[in-house]
Image (cartoon, rainbow, N blue to C red; front, side):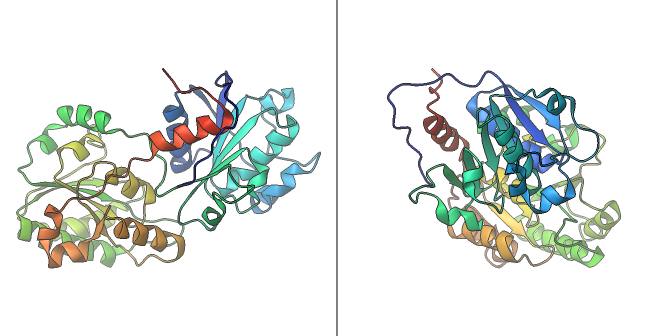
Length: 347
């Protein structure tokens, strides 16, 4: 991870106004709020949708007069009201960050999360993951404002997990040990996971439960097709498991505190990163083979002993009793951001 040092011995005050600007995508909003929380900032949550052209060519927002948003212009944009700090996340929001920085003559400081696919010099700070191409620039001359994380930014803390583990819904609190939490994803922009993928995952989970004697706490996500969950649970007949129905209080993230191990499907970098915060065994299950940047992320997580593959755990369950590395990046990242801008560390 690169380290950005502020050269002055004097500090400037933290921003009085911080906006998180997004189109409502939960994964992007979550990372932005994670950074604001880590910095100790209260952030205003605002929505805006960039034009299709700006999503394709975000650097065009640096051109005076270029249209930024799709549809009705937001009131704040019409009035020329802007924050001291703007946090955005995801390629499609990069153009709005560039545009606001131009409209304010760089008085609004901008932090963008994830590879924007344009020059880092369009932002005051850029935070990318190690599996992004832009990560290679971090730490080189002229790119001191580029920071690198291994996983995605998240708001979880081990204290919060421990606190919520004390109030789990009854079906989950009564599971016998060892408990394996199973975080289930599904369809995404890269692929659709079909019935056979979920049936195969069910068979693997059943095999692991039989080998280890574990009970399973199944937590599907919004992207998990309900019809395919049936294919998964059929394979678990006769085993000890509980499935969150989406109606009762969500046992996440408290279930991470109760669990002896966490199984996550490979489609979600966010779920994998959050699970690795616990330092417990994190087992990655593949619904479909990952490629490109996501495959690089999982290879890095495995090499750093944050995770193991489900196939490895099935072949050798004893691997789950070895120490796993904690992935807790937010304290370091927030310190580097403060140093870059000259903001004083909290007392």
